[in-house]
Image (cartoon, rainbow, N blue to C red):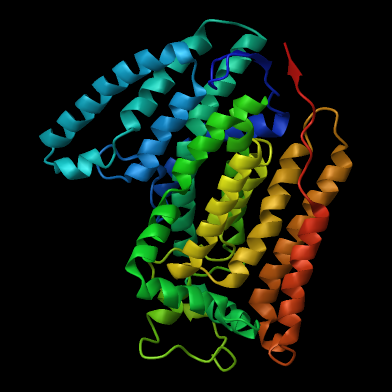
Length: 420
């Protein structure tokens, strides 16, 4: 696919590495699944329809603002002025509509960005209608990339509501107990430090909520190294799908709800805590194991390895802060972060296996090995933590073995690119 300064800022004609069949399929599935899940949400009591995450009134500026930035970073440079103008009209209409239905101005401003995202989709749809053959497919790929990331994340919120509905009990006691088998209580130390330093807590909260906004940076940089931006988006979508399915195996609500809120005066001894499943509050997300925040941050780190040393260093800092945020804000356990490592590798190798001129079988083998580690960890958290209490040192061995195996698997190489 040719790009004459359509996305990035560098005035070079680049042949972008096109989407492979699996990447295109993941993007194509988003609108189909969105419609299907809207219908399913009407049948499943307690589920949250996907469109709620795209509310034009009550929303999160980190989410909606990033949706606008992603759309602008993907589109042709020539379209940006028209998109901003049409987007401003959409935003004005949205705020007027909010006022007419008595939505407070502050609430409607929190959804700023949706108008620009919608305008980008409208203008890109116009490009889809013009060409035929492969050029039209390329235009469809761009439209799907603009559409898929915000809507895909909206689907993860719906998926979370489905898990809450059908999974009343979680394995938080086992997750907490496993962390207690490690020689250093890192999660407790980070949470304690964060709780005692408001400035650090505020910093981690910004990092934790800025995850989607950082996706925009990766999407904007992809074309500079010759990759179609949909390649990164497809990996994000695949991780969201993995997370939805894995949360049925070893769900957790995180230490804040399952431990700190229950044991206010003093935290329990991990070696003596009853490992019976925890009856979690209905409203608490069952998304602790594994940590998708960490998984996404690691996938961004993998992508940033191709952007140069400075971008890689910035992505590494963000990944480290994300991990600290998951612990400091009491959202996750150490073991959640460990399992995120092979999950990130599994998604990267699986999608890369369908690129042209790569050893597909070898790539799928690495993806399978990484994913097998994820499943093994989930089964261990579900069934085997009690046995580990008799040999606590084995917990550290398992963690180190997982990280060593992940290092051996590595990240998929990027095929060469052609410049014209």
